[in-house]
Length: 306
Image (cartoon, rainbow, N blue to C red):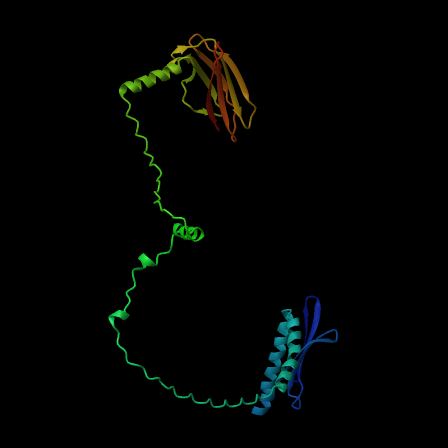
C-alpha cells in the first residue's frame, strides 16, 4: 500500500485528502488536502525510527492508515484552518532544531579571597556603681502629651514674656437630666362615669344610623331587604322621622344602582333591591340619611362576590 485518497464534503465544499509514502530514500508519510487542485494543508511525518529498528512494512502501513484517518476526521470536523497552521509550523520547528547549538560551558568562578582575620580590641575593665543607674520616672507623669491649653500658654508666653498668666480651672457643665413624666393616676369609677356622660352629651345631637336585622353579609345576585333606622341621642334613642334616605349600590364591574325613600315616624326606612351579580372586582352599599334639620349620617357595607 503506497497511499490513500478520500473525498470529503463539508460546508458545501469537497475536500480531497491524499496520504502517501515517499519511499525509503525519503522516509516521510505525506498527507495533502486539496480543493479544486489547490493544496490547502499538508502534514509530514518522518519514519526514520522504523528504518533504524529494522524496516517493517506492516507497521508502516498502520502509520500511513492512522495518519490518513486523522486528517480525514479533522476535515470532517471543519478544522481545516488548524491543519493549515500545523503545516506552516512544521518548517519553523525543523529550522529551529537545525539552528540549535550546544551552549558553551560557563567559565568557572574565580576563587574569592579569604577574609582577613578580625582583630579584637582589648576591652577595659570597669565596675557599675549606683550613681550610674538612672531610674526613669513613670511615663504618665513626665512623658504625657501636652494639652491644647499648655500649647496656647507656651505660645502666649513667648509672644508676651512680661505678662503674667493666671490659670483658671475649667468647670465642665453637664446638661440637665430630663426626668420622665410621672404616670397618670388610675381612673376612678366616678371619673369613668363622667367621661361616658361627656361622650353621650357630645353625641346627643348627632344623627345616628343603624341597619336593623343586619347580619353584615350581602351577596351579589341576592334579593336584599335593607332596613335603616335613623335616630338621635346616645345609640339613637330618639327616632327621626321624615329623614331622606338614599341607598347606592356601587361596583367596579357594573353600573351603579340608586334607590331613595324616607323614614317613618318610628325612624325606619325599608329598601328592597336585587343586588347586581359579579364575579370580579369590588362592590359596596352606601347608605346616606339627611335629617329635616339638615345634618347627615352615612353607613357602608361590603357586597361579596357570588
